[in-house]
Length: 221
Image 1 (cartoon, helix red, strand yellow):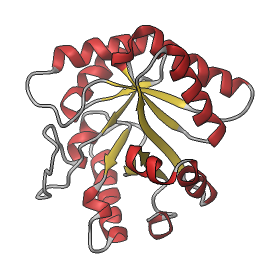
Image 2 (tube, rainbow, N blue to C red; image 1 turned 45 degrees about the horizontal axis):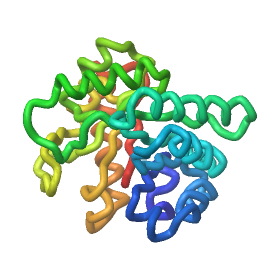
Image 3 (cartoon, rainbow, N blue to C red; image 1 turned 180 degrees about the vertical axis):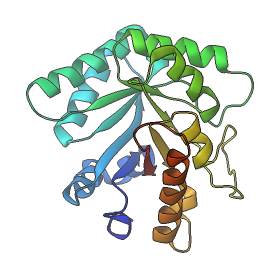
Image 4 (cartoon, one colour; image 1 turned 60 degrees about the horizontal axis):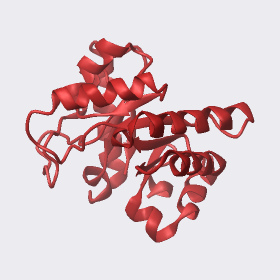
């Protein structure tokens, strides 16, 4: 998939299924091809273990990594400190994102999402993952430099699958998202390269029509 989508796609997600099957080699293969890696392992453990996991991700050359906000302030701070320490010694510019709530969850979650985002912000992590419907209020509350990555992106007419809180690429751009995670609409498409190109074109059109200053990045998973 990396070979088919490079160089048009810059970012690739390595999630728990791929990492369990292939381990760090999956990350090394993507970075060797010139791609940036979003390591989505959603660390949720004691602070020492979380910090160690983030430090290991930095040594691998990962660019983004996730930590569950449910790990609490100490866990989030351990992740932020590990990323900062890695940057200090020149390993990588790794950024940490706190996972607020999963996009497979339904219901009225705004209060819980904002509480989790507040914890992440106060712990000095770089941003959060959140559904598109919550992205705009997070940006308004914490400012443009606080990153928001939005999973559950589906082009209009695509199957929702097991996601609940989904949105189109254009909706994500208008909400201020910095990263858009798109999985099956690309990886399961008959022509993944054409599907990715179509998504990138939609992102660019939405950005020109009044989206954020910097064009959001699409992250196939």
